[in-house]
Length: 415
Figure 1 (cartoon, rainbow, N blue to C red):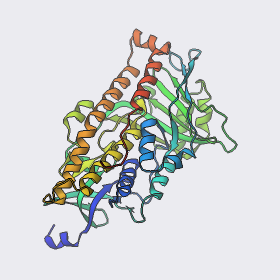
Figure 2: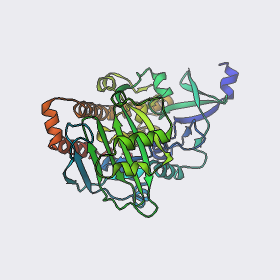
Figure 3: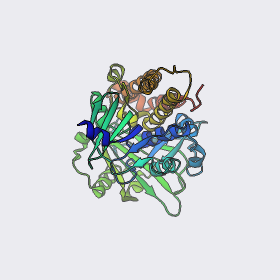
């Protein structure tokens, strides 16, 4: 760009790419600390793909940190435990399934409808924080600034660029981070609504065979989130097929003989409440060796460490990221313990490096656990099949999920 074009670019101290969970929470965390940011969102409105997410204590600590925890608690019921059913290593529908037991827990867990979460976060932000229909097409460096080029021709000049733009992150590509790898499995997810109430227990209902993991969780008295994880190659599913009705029929037909009335729940799903996605993840050693921050640019959430739903920490870990990043960046920009002679761009770099230092081992731990659990979940062999059939694996999985969900990322207070 010419100097004249650079001078014509609009200037923002902090630009966040993506108005998903990470982007909105990071912006709200910064706002609570008195730091302004601008979110660039490619869509015309909030995107709510995925429909719902299961939250553990770590997620609720993060939501409380930005002041929206109690607003969401009023909308979604407390999950009291797991109801697990298995048919061992026998394909679906060829063996009587059996209840492995009700596994109860005494910590906070709820299944949140994603639309409600995003709208709640958005409602707490100052007007004008989000610029919709702002697709990033390229990123350019000029001195200590980044120039963010948008599809509509606008250029935004910023001192700090934060990528919260998901698995196919433009910011991650600019940083040189490798794309997540395929697991060979996919997920179809949906949200079913019961106008007169569904009547299911407030538990995480889970059913597993050697080729399918599926289940459902009540969000409130009238809404149920369901999922089906499977291998497209084994089930001969056409991954190019994005027709909602075909997805619903595919899942319902494959779960026709499954317990817990899963197929009936799936069939109640409206066509605009179902989606398909291949399951991909960042390999743990790539997270260890990769640099998810460079100078005044960093990535957060799925843009940094995409993971499968094996331990239910995709959303929770993204919320953690946002709180830590807001705290570190806020500390670097607002406290007086940074020497006066430091330029503001050095303060930004210091804040991002503090964030990387604090988050790297937590992210590495999560990705390692997800990788190992996924490998065991879909492995064969007599020992593993026996463990699955007897419920041993599931009990250990619940313990792992509880341990990973007990993490405390801290609040937004700056010492």
